[in-house]
Length: 487
Ligand code: LRH
Image (tube, rainbow, N blue to C red; front, side):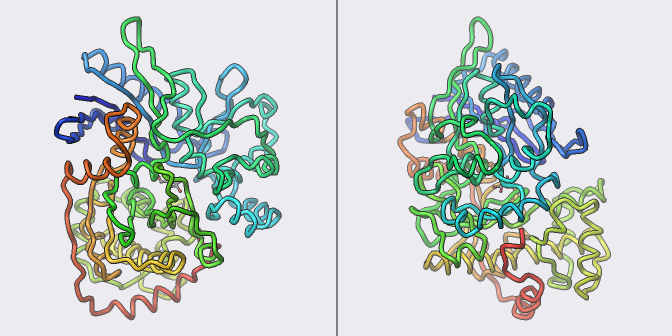
């Protein structure tokens, strides 16, 4: 029996999961050890991650597991992409872990991108335009005249920072490095010229490595030392690695704070169609490309729930399933939703400015979001079909958001495709799976998917006839003009 721990950091909630893998029966069991809130904090006028809080929760939980006498064969950390930490020569942290939701890049990113020529950039990196790509964050940092800027010796993506804190080793995981927008998508190498253009130094980074690599050991105390094995450290890469995708005609949605909707492809898709649709080509755990579209996901719902603290997501979904559908619609990717002062006001203002009724309750607001997300999935699927030349006949939804039966059903209805949901803990499972591959306990990526498919429950949703669908699609298209200007 193997026991492996995944630290899976989400933008709003983080968890430490313990997995047991039985090699004889090829079965995997997952247990939640600890779940804790993750939140943004304001530091020196910037929105940052509370890095001390995260580190404290991680180390306390891991130590408690060891003290309880749990045999642990390996540990690995994954988190959201693009964000990083700077270190000095001695390995000390410089500054804060500024969040991608901070506005520091929102103006300048577009200018910088135009200066570099987005088409050339896209051809080289295959990475979508998002104002928060690491490339633009580094540019903003280099222009901030921070007093410690000259002391930067290394830049680590967030999960690799925690790996470093555990092992003392520096490591750059390929999947997360691909989200920086600074890797050549064909060679997987850092584009030094681009790194320099961002005001950064190519020496701050080293060669990326594939998931499954042993990074080092965490010496807990005199008696205990545990291997630290790199998972796909980008949570989306981990989630897709755990999605039981068995053929090319199934599209996936990794549903959480974001809805990442896409396909796997052996090569990057960088045609003008893909560029116009702002599809990204992120590095997959299994050397495939994750060709996908970022759609603003549960972030919108989390923003609504802030205003109704007594409501939980299950109650909200139940109530919104009783609301009339397709009354008011939003473009979920409109930049006004990336970090509004109030999500409710942002949705209300959007409805007013687009001549639609203002939703009058939490459930009506949520229904507006769910309908709009499903419509947005439909458009994204069409863009993916155009860019890849494939036809989809099914959708697999994984991640925390896959527990939302209302959204799963709406997705099936609006896309007119069967939907299968699960596993819920996809990123933790992808994390664990690649540690087990690293340990030699699981043969390869495909075997991992079979093991996950056989070990965890799934649920099916079949498309139903939806009377107001066509007019809703037309109205939605009037709102969301497909353009890379949209986030
Ligand atoms: C999802 C995610 C997504 C990125 C965003 C920053 O958690 O990693 O893939 O685009 O966060």
